[in-house]
Length: 409
Image 1 (cartoon, rainbow, N blue to C red):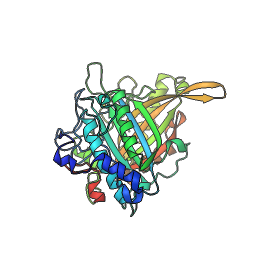
Image 2: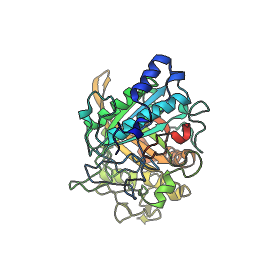
Image 3: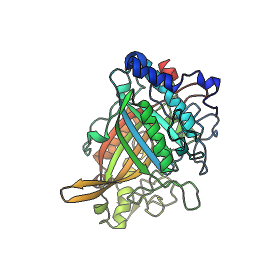
Image 4: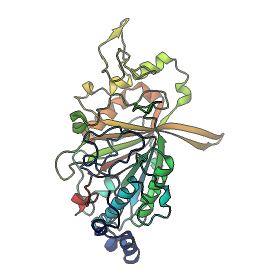
């Protein structure tokens, strides 16, 4: 990875020049930045994206930002920001250049340019930084028209959305094996965006994506369920056709939905194991379908036992099965969260899941599946979406280029 002092990197323009100019001249004419984070997935990284050995350095360069296909590491933090009114296309370009330098440095284990605590950037930390833009960052004065099918999610009956966990013009997802490194990277990205955008919300969660021997595994949510077994596998044609936008000015991008889902663990624990498994359609021990086989085997939706369907009609895995939706799929990731909240009766713990869905066409893929679950899904009894946001994850960038260049230049 090139040194930030090299002539090629230097030509992008220094952080002091960008942020200093913005501070003295005014955002509309001065700044020019965008939000960026993260980086490609198809160049010098492995040809087949996916799980990497613990302690890897993930290249930021390629046709796609690598954090999308990367196997979930231990810690994920997502932040959303709101653009200041004065920020236009030129200003977004400047922010993009600054963030590109940050991404290249932080993912390699170096401090970002001007970093007051560079020793907090750990090398080989499985670190990825992924940037997306929300509806407020689109339009003729900013990133232009969004990709086909990108729109806000229509209201769902069971949603109880809170403003504090919803929306945003920009999104930065930082994931890695170490919470300190992740938190430091988030802080640098947010600090460098401050002349252009204000922090709207931040959400952090954890995931156990490896077994006791360090081998990749699907991981479990706080209900104890193996979560994500039906995902298309990175590196396959199915994954590529599900996730990546392939044509037009947004080629190499994807769309992201982030849902903050509160989980009622107390009432869930009152169920018998059989009731818990039938609500999902999979065994709790290993995630295998109730109809038999192993975790990655498909469900037999026609199987019956003693005159009733083995996988109930309102089981989560049936309601979301591609065969009921014309083959539509999504690629999902999760991060478990807990937080202490104050109530009139004292503090209590809220538990839940940060659910991220990636798909090429949000309206055609995610929305029909979510409507099906909203209409009839046993898990609605114990889960409630309290936050929701949509973003376009920018295409990747190559060495010597910058995030969003093709959209803003």
